[in-house]
Image 1 (cartoon, helix red, strand yellow):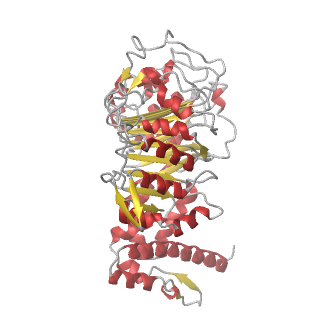
Image 2: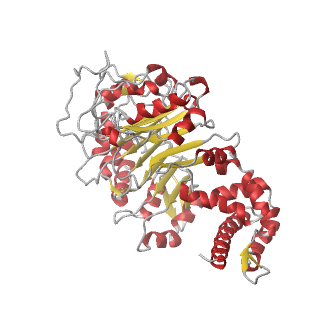
Length: 545
């Protein structure tokens, strides 16, 4: 590449970076409502502010004077927002470094914004990444908690050879990776996925070979660890989790799919310290209850499981079931306030759910599996198995419920949804994400309920209804508005609303990023008189993002 071509391409990249940051500045100044800020936003929006003529006649991007005049803390935060989301991979590091090249002022601001340098995504490659480059990057993060994600490079298409031959060289026996956890900068969070059960012990041996003093190693000072590993071929006598950092407060464990469930043990001292624990596996069995029973101080728990194994059956008399545990004497985790349940397949709810009890649960997130039909009631079966709908065992503190499905819109049985919500009277916040249901039929169910004088109101404490990615043929936005109105009995006389009940608890409806390729929902949102009526008469604000 010639010198002129290189200079031209570099100038083009600088212009793009300046435009991205300037747009963010305009949005920020516009939101800060004052005459001075509006003038700044208008000045920034002029194209003449984004370029200047160089001596050689070419145009180059420069930082607008008004951008430089902003406090460095605000400009640094804007840099962080417009740059790629962390963790920063090798391809994205150039975007961060590019900020340094725009002008001296931007360079100083970026170097003094530690959060720009606090995250990295490291790919295991041949040749390996230079350790000094990573150390210099993290040194700019200063005292901000640092995070490192480790993955196999895309060029390493085959699984690690140590999976078939324990004497073969392990891809995770990487000098840079071992040095980072032996003598490198202190990290708060580490995320790594191993190919085989042998990769983890091999990696720990490489760390110990460089530094055998646990008190001085970054590995042993980790507070958060995300570990992906396979237990295929591991016997109960092989305790591969003995190498876990002793000071963990957050532990995310991903067990790779395998043919047979395996009993595994995690040191009780580590589980007792955890504030957050999540586990993901492809099977349902009593083996999951082993680690869960010791998470006595955990405040956040996430369980992702499935029942993909056709021969997977177990009963309450299973030998690996914790002693004295039964539906009438479940494992109680009193400090858990946030719980996430993710079902991987369209099967019956996991059998271990009735064996767990969360008396102080506040926030519940449920991921429904597969594509439901009007005849299926998987959601209701899940809540029933969990005993969340039974008055004697339901958490009286439950305030927030999120039902979500990824990556496709999920068609939910309207009657199942109605029955679940009818059994959760303490909810104040309801979120439906990527969920499609027959809103008109749901509204009719609610109207029938309101006609019965002795029946309690559906979700009597509901304050905020949030719909994320709503859409589909069955979703009707006007029915959502009518549901909000039907929560408070009223009559309309000549466009005036006369209420027959006290004010309702519902105060906000939030709609985020709907699926509307035909423009139907957008048309209703722009033309419906219900939005203004809800705000003026019912005290309900409708927000769209």
